[in-house]
Figure: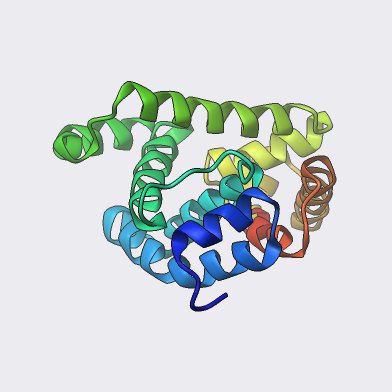
Length: 192
């Protein structure tokens, strides 16, 4: 697989090949992480953005098409996830400020906006079926950026309870999405 072209890997990915997916992941994770980290200046956020992109790649594996390489696909995906991150919750004010200073880098085509909305809707539908407490803790952690300690303080529960609820959320999301071993690694962003 290491010598396969991106087009060949894309065709294999369309057929559900975990080996092709792993090769794409190994080939592009580090460069995507550097781009994300340079744009958001936060290691944890950059990792979450890249992991979300790879999770979405697997979920959309049957319909992914690339012209030449995954490089352009991932460049757009990083852009969407950064926009998505800054547009949620307590980051909204930062997002508006950040977008105003970077808007020329992020002009979206109608097709790109629809892709971003589709990705967001898929994630939202998955989260909405979690039990109420799991959903709340998940949203505080992932969407609002709270730490486990902050969640525990906000909800007046122990950090261990937060950890258990996040673990339940990870398990239910994995079960709902029918994830494989490769995807399970991508769900690490629900940890801590």
